[in-house]
Length: 273
Length: 360
Ligand SMILES: Cc1cc2nc3c(=O)[nH]c(=O)nc-3n(C[C@H](O)[C@H](O)[C@H](O)COP(=O)(O)OP(=O)(O)OC[C@H]3O[C@@H](n4cnc5c(N)ncnc54)[C@H](O)[C@@H]3O)c2cc1C
Ligand code: FES
Ligand code: FES
Image 1 (tube, rainbow over the protein chains, first blue to last red):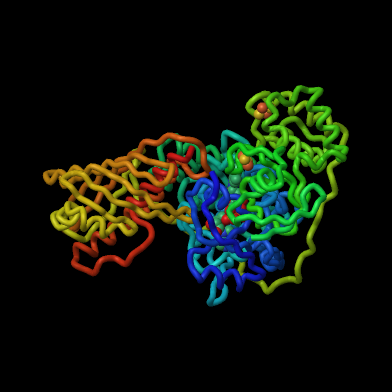
Image 2: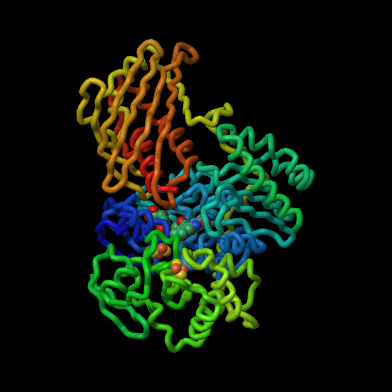
């Protein structure tokens, strides 16, 4: 239950961290809240960690009236507390509050969670649901990747070994926006058994419905979203059984039902406002 | 490495290995044994201390990562009025028995009281969910914390200022785009993955029947010996941050008539072991090609971890079976051996098995 030996470096800037990553068997250390357990269990044995906690640019926030960009280094707790300005009509804070426990949220970061890409992780599903964009930096500069393309599968992302995630761009939700988030888990703070997300922003023309924690990349439900946009929550709920059955055909019936229930409750929560 | 931090008001310079977590540094180096260790994976809360004023898990925080931090352990709250009130309430409400969870529980409780003030019992229970107590059944703990929180207001919040408006980023699409299609239709709950090969069934089977050649298609796998139906070898695993190397032994059974094979094996990596069975079968496919079906079953036992969730296997098998099939196809077509990659099908299966052994 103790980590194997490793070398520790602390980076001052993204450029410095990226240069260290390029030297091989080096991993980024953000909050360590996923890396720490994996290393203690010796599932992960990196030769070297490059700590990015002191990189100021990872804690930038910027926004215009359409998009808000959050640095990868913000902690779940800072998002929960509204230390980071809210652009999501409360969605981000609500989701943050349901992640793990306060002591974990005080250290774990948005970027670390996304880079780790646990399919049951709350942010992984949220950024895909919101059709966000991830900003990634490597030796050749920055590139921007749609969230749906970033998450390739369980614990697998589009990040190259010498790249790191620097920021997440999410749509600013308009004042008339409504959303619902439902996380099914047996114990508070646990990773989700199933996640349902529904977002509707009439001003921006944004309608998204997503089934998450499917142990693979999150699964958007465009048909339900279309129904939600055109005919309202009840119509969206009406197509759920079929759309989930079609898109998650290889899940066992009980597992599929969990996703249907999570998504239905998310849409119901959206409807209640 | 040398690291300086402030512990319970005193500046301390420690010489520690990077791998030493904060809890061990507190307990072993500073003799502050009030901080307890239960799970060492962030779940139980026994190790919770304040780092820079907020509760954190000292078991998944490295001491070197706390340079210049201000740490407060349970020994450091003697003069703290909230903690004094909590200690008295814990005593009055029988909120502890063996006391193992108590240091972490008190640190968490103090934060809840100060941060949230008086809250509903349901919220209080949620907030305490990250601290596990095996003795009390929680009723006394919840009552004690509620008693101290009663009538209190939450603390004021910090806020950050927004940066200057940035250059406009493209607007997200208005309507959802097509979701990626899943690789395979069909309603089976059994773990099976099918991939199409361009090779004819006979050519694919001939390739698969030669285990040494199969191993070449399994990047990360290395076959050490083949003795009749007994094989030994090792597989390397890389999945996100997870890396492992399993040395294992197994038994292979091949059946030419049905073009099917089966490998049952056990593997060990350090303290963990896994046991499982992989079956494969070559079926006729479209246009003279073939279809490779891969089935997986596994047996696992063991304590909890963040990683072991059964359905993960499905996604992993799907992706790896596809990679394996591409390599196999190339090999049957007489192309150069596939470039070495970290992740192999069996490697992957083993990794999942292993995660399950350590996992839920
Ligand atoms: C008990 C417990 C319960 C939890 N429950 C939940 C839950 O319910 N829901 C949930 O979503 N999460 C949960 N988590 C995980 C938690 O949210 C972690 O904080 C998060 O997954 C990882 O963030 P981190 O900053 O700690 O990253 P780290 O652990 O430091 O890093 C994780 C991985 O990402 C890489 N990485 C980190 N930052 C970057 C970057 N900027 N660029 C590139 N790579 C990077 C690291 O190299 C590593 O491989 C739980 C954790 C614990 C311990
Ligand atoms: S020992 Fe740290 S949370 Fe269990
Ligand atoms: S008092 Fe024994 S574990 Fe809580």
